[in-house]
Image 1 (spheres, one colour):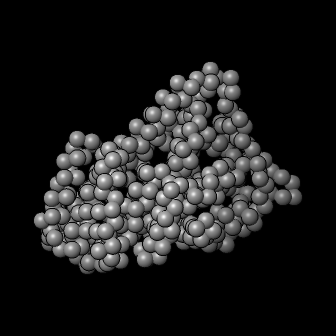
Image 2: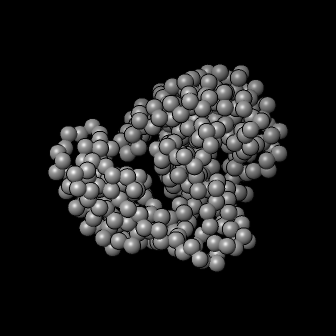
Image 3: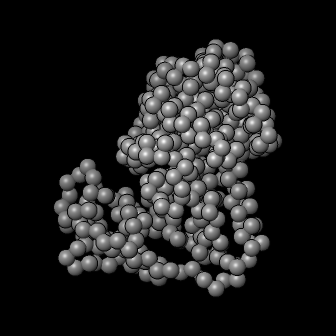
Length: 379
């Protein structure tokens, strides 16, 4: 399987990279994700150049350049011209169907544990590297991580359109996507509450993840009592998970609550507890969230210079983990906080520009609409 790195506009297979221009990247990725289907030039223009007015020749020129760049991967794919219709990408099956590793149950369990370990440590880049080289390494599939890896690397559109996952699981992914991209947190709350109400068919990890995210929505809409009630309700459940990741997130939600309540000493205590936990369990994904939380507290304390440093460090740390949903969530949190509390308009504008760049890359309006449609259908 070819892996697409959106931030670098690179296609990757077995450690080999092909550098593409932005529209070449979008064109190849679209055709690859819809392999086997024929697309007219007009359909490709709508998919890759939705807000522009290029000519049919634009598609032909880009197809020509992409073909040249992927020529060395002719054993993996071929872009064929369909006379009178347009173009179609054909993927060639390179999986070694007779590899003994694919029949080794112990190896499959080891691979699953490896994905789980990287996940628990917040090492999204390592997870993506494994997934990108699955065919070369003869790694067996894993039902959960085969889906989750799309979420990690920001393949939100393909995730929402996937037929391989059930409606409830798709709704869980959709609410995380929707709430990260929805500027009005109040709009997300009903979806969280409807999905959480189906707790009898949710795993403990899914249920608690949803409830922790709902707490943040309550805090951002000023529903402080509701946020406290929810945290008290799930405190024992979080402890029973024995998960440093969930424990760190829980502490940060408590810290945010204290900040909003103006209880800054209590907020400092929760932040310190989270930092001590992450010193023992260095989960970089949660480390990024902790630094962003620290910035919010420092802003409230009036230490603008230190707050800026913590915010920069937090976003950079999250970006390096290559967990795209967490990057979006932390950026959105920073923008929401600085929008509600005008401590630092200069930095708010700075991070708004970063958000706008990601918006152009991922098409937030389109994703938000698709996620909302999915949620209304499933819930």
